[in-house]
Length: 429
Image (cartoon, rainbow, N blue to C red; front, side):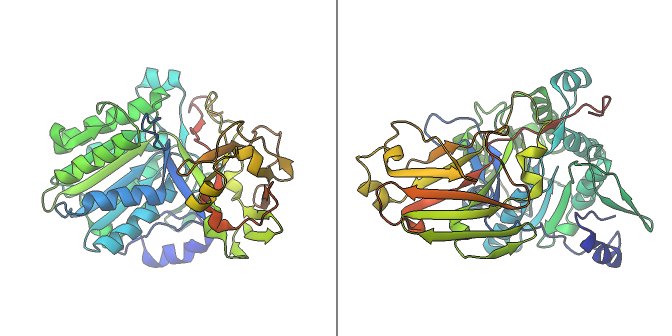
């Protein structure tokens, strides 16, 4: 049985059958779009999120010089986790195509994942729905069992999954705006088995809910029952969950690799998405959601961003209360621009508007090199978001000089950290 997220894939799904050995590579995201994972705040000034390509680079640097693992297996329960998979698979193909890849996630790059309330998670000793299913299936797995089939079965058992299933010759639509678990492989990973030896990292960046702590503790105990306590690193035991802690955990696991070991990374907790304007510089980039276009004029830079329908905050009405998304514009000035404007405050140099509404810039924040500036976009109807259509971001120079994209080291729009849709199975709402 194979899982896909579009009707267009059904013909191919039928043709390869349920037991074929061909890889199922991760879906690539629309141009300029990135997923990210939540991290705890860092006293050293590191960001509170790590984007997909940044995590792939951390893994590449960790593996460089380490003993070559037989496979890398990554699992993401975080919102938009499906978008973390393609960058890692691509990196491995460039780094060493002999390393087999298997990746799974609770949802696609454009979806939030689902989990129960604190009371339900505490009283039932469970985590999030997809991880609960992964835990159940992996508990029954033995060394040598096919990893892809394990991950596939976990998605099939996920009670929060909404997907197209091939059941015999019938198609079943479970319906609703639910999560669509991803099960992917590359570089021969479709046929790889579990074990016998592994180095494991189990990470949660900001364990704000009981379900997240349960996810980490249950998966840590499970991996230890399979691979031994010395080989499993848990963020709840590592002394922190910042950028530095995650890098240290990954490096420690890579350093402990012996030839033929598998490398396993499980990530839980909040996720986010970002649209990167630096990647949207080519005008007229067509996507299934419209076009994202960057244009220039006298002293302004504007972007029409085609934000996927599933990423509209209008759909997030049931998001875990107390974890409301805080979307923002982010930018990091180039060294030359920062040097030229260093004596000024950001609000004296630039102005920003989103969908025709002016955004309030941080007061008395100086322009300085190496410092990312974030400008909140009010959430909750104050400023409209257009799902599946163009969202206009305009940046004006208050100094009258022309703006060019190369003045920015990075610039884009981010959802902020998103902590799942919270629904209990007994209530159905």
